[in-house]
Amino acid sequence: MIIYDLTCAEGHRFEGWFASASDFARQSEAAMVRCPLCNDVEVAIVPSARVQVGKYDPDRGDPDLAAATLPKPIPEAGEMMAGLPPELVRKLRDAVLATENVGRRFAEEARRIHYTEAPARPIRGQASASEAEALHDEGIEFAALPAFLTRESH
Image (cartoon, rainbow, N blue to C red; front, top):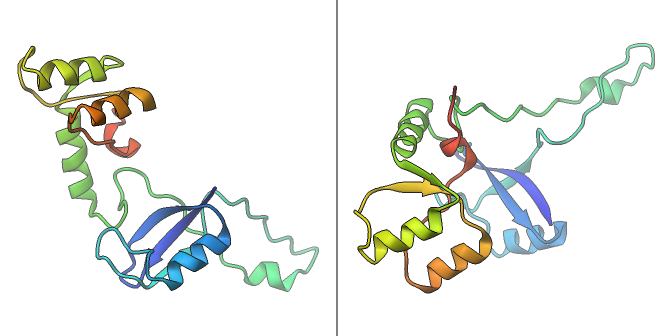
């Protein structure tokens, strides 16, 4: 599995997971890779902050390395994420954090709410892959949230 940092012609940055480099090329040529924000098919791979980059050593006199541009670091949660303005990211995170955190009891509590055994309310928590699959099979709606929205700041 290869994880690429991608950008569209509008400058939205997002992540894509592919089986291989040729899989990305095949999907890209078939217009299957699209920006999740604007649906643009003009998608390109951008340097990843996960890549280790060496420093320029003036004693070595390596002109290629000196001319190289370093990738932009991954933005913090308060900065622009996936093309979203910082104030929208903060509002989304505040809305998520205003929900009740039921932790590892998420699947159990989601079932209780779904079957009206507990009061309806917004909850969040963790579920294993098998618990999530079982909830889906039972027709219980839920969504996985990106870590930057669920991370509680201290």
